Image (tube, rainbow, N blue to C red; front, side):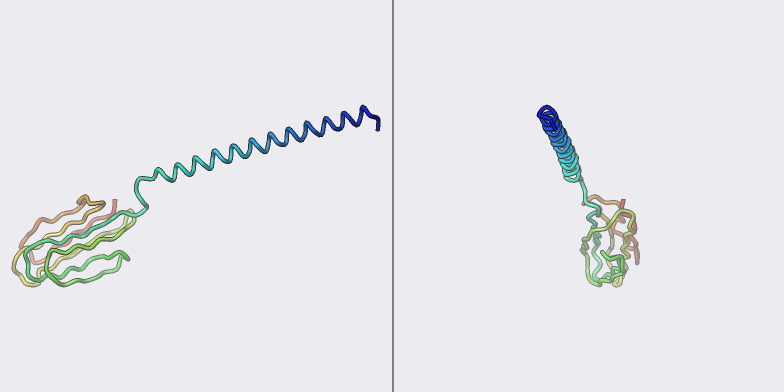
Length: 138
């Protein structure tokens, strides 16, 4: 191989190396930009995948039974006097329910279901023997 051919071969190798370096740097920049955009997108989420739920029982009754769907969607029971509150998290579309029985027959009973602190279902205090608050997580 002549000296001219060696020099041309050497210069062609340098050009290929520079082109490959430019390609790799470009790919790294694009991947870095895309990755950073995904990071910011995930930080912009306003609310988590589940909502904060509260059941509230109010009234003046001296003895009530509360049967409610708990955080695992199982029926649970509580006997006592109002006021009573149960808080948990639930996913969109889930059924919420609290049944209140006035066991003593005296006073009043009422209930409310709240999502993020805002009422989505309310029964004002009443002298009825039993009431049921029911809703679906929006």
